[in-house]
Length: 378
Image (cartoon, rainbow, N blue to C red; front, top):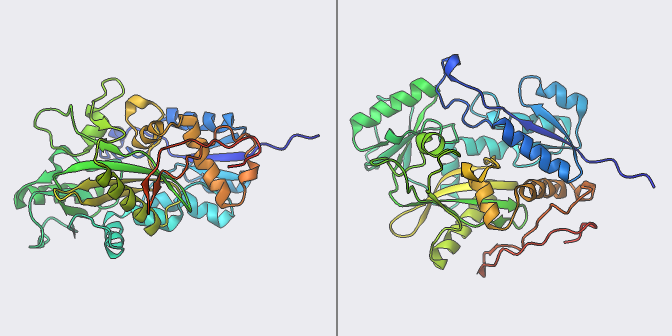
């Protein structure tokens, strides 16, 4: 009997480059992936029996995808430029009728706009910090906002534009930071009330009944003396490195059951409100009353394989019993199932479907693995 053709997976990505020689901000390519991450994802997919084609998400991506037409695309591409750059590859794939992993163009475009994300979530009854968008440093600050404030670019991720001095305590410093954002990132600044509380990030996997992975707390232990307790560009990419990792993460987070359930419920509401698919990571801070406020939604979360790099989604997955290969193959399987293609994955031994880790009615359950057998039951 003829063996079935392996599933042909295109892996779309953007490789990180040096911005220094281009005269760009040093964090310009921070969202892009290292070659080691792209290769680790490709190897995980190959171990599940897939044939993998690497496709750089550059200006030639449309032609490459049109000519090769993979069965499905595993998408981690951040996009080259523009306020809707994360939507570029999904839009192309939808136009070509090629299935892909992760959220759709609308969700990705909304999530990259921090202000629009917060407005939608507030409409849905989810709390976010009080905020205002300033198009230029001379714009008037709303009297509703109270210092300290934190200033961010409105259309960035991976802590781009968020520096240790982004927390400001007076109007003079505020104007300086707004001017810095507008000049260096060519976009408005989002000004938020700074919530001086515990910070958590929550990973989710799945679709109809998404699994909430163990909560990661960013404790900020080990930061240089006097540093602000924020996950700034310096904290993420300069001070905390695989060579000299900082001990500033706790997973699972040490939180009371009541708070963990509250965080889980909020994460699920956000996931569903924005129409996220397959995988997502949600950042939040908890105020002094124990109420979570959403900071950011990441439908294209980082997936660095090295545990010393403190990539939060893989860290949460490891705490739930996933290997890196299982995380990647499970994301792929969730996408295949959405398209009615689950049977196309030849080797399902690396697919790990935990029982629903959080239930809106009964709260948390244990993270029990339920790998699919060779017949795909589960």
